[in-house]
Length: 350
Image 1 (cartoon, rainbow, N blue to C red):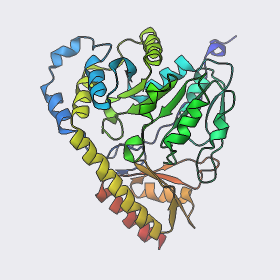
Image 2: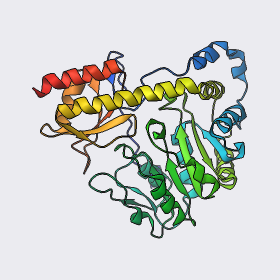
Image 3: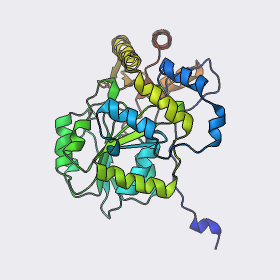
Image 4: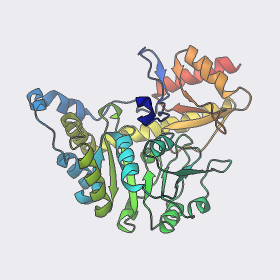
């Protein structure tokens, strides 16, 4: 028998392409087009590299306390990890251990089924409606847990807090995870519900609205009991997850609320402007509350547009998958980047 018979084989998550050419207009991975808060760069300059010989604080207490102050949440109800992907993967491993399938939408963040396969978790996808909304009834059946993003990715569609609370209320015997990676761009967080439901975990990230995708900082907020179980799993897996620079720079990003709000509002304004311009060019899209648009053209196939845009140095995201194979996910970049996108499309679509 080959040793490969004992290998855990999974189909890995495929991230958006990371081109090496810096002249590319990169609108394919939902990164923030603006730099992080000025205090982040200042802190980086001030850091003593000699301190890097030491292990970081395994509890990331400084960052946890900053998040606690900002979100008005007890530090014991906050968990931090290496990007929200790390937090979510740890949550899958910790909370989804039933024989019943976990539930998530059929069109959603494509890491969910990867983690389910990796950890041998049974799962079932629930079909979104034709306009990409969830059907709450689909999540009110026996299950081993529930997870979905709000706003959803890649659709950008936002579900109401009232509907989400109905789902949580009907699933008190399992953990419900709401992935709020894009909530700052026009969504409403369900964070206030963590004091009402001890089975609710809210996950957010510094990668989008706080412009720190390269630092890999994510966090979860939930009941003290939930967070305690997450920490037990984390410290059984890898105690020192967040590195020292990430902790220090994360604190600075949280401190500058004015810059944070200015950046978010700037992206929202660009998104709404571009919606109108794309509409005039024959595009249709969901009412995105994220930092991207999920667009389709009335006559030109998405696959063709993806190809010609890439050939001309503009990268967007395309999935050749059922139900979404005629849509592009277009990250909102700077006004200048979006102007170049619109200008190219005007010429091409003539």
